[in-house]
Image (cartoon, rainbow, N blue to C red; front, side, top):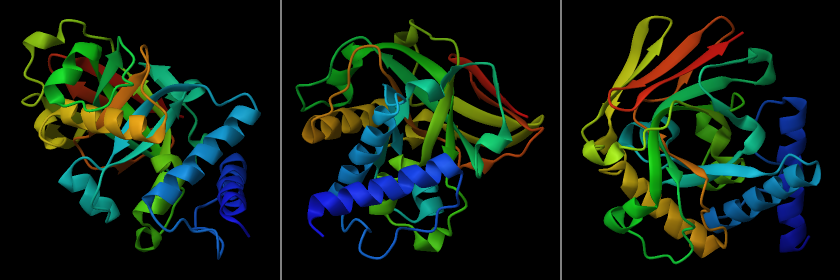
Length: 263
């Protein structure tokens, strides 16, 4: 099969698994993306499959594996990105059904809302700050669909949209410039128990480093960030897994709280 057909078939395989709520066990022989660029090509085709059924509007993007703790968890040594579909972007507090996921996981993050298009490239932590309208405490919702982590690599993770299945956004803080985002301590609380803590600087040294990396990579790929979009900058706590009846709060003093309940 030619390259385009291979990409389309890999994306369709993942799309059909998503729709069926199937476990992830890699890809069929011959369809596994060979490198990260091939993984992004499959991801783009997967998003096109969602667009074809009217569910492809992109509300923002997530940066995955921006901290050593998350890279160690998955066994991947580089950041990755994935799109956040509009119907999966929730305002806090929200209640979701565990049955809508195969294996629902959560991550505590600092999210940003953009006030400008980022289509020039060459961004760094300093230059990209002017495009940040607001920051907020957030929860990323991931679904690894029960994969054996010995079977995963960066191309497959990217192809499957970096496991993003949504986000929960706390109240927006427009006056974020008075905060030292790298020093902010985030806390993940599940069912009244502290499940993990981290600081903003765990994310590539500063959350805006992750934002700049994402902006530059999306320009390279032809999908620049747009004003109004949300960016999840990366988890400061390793992924935790939920079941029906659980609740989680991502608490970041200065940025507030995001809350998710699972029924």
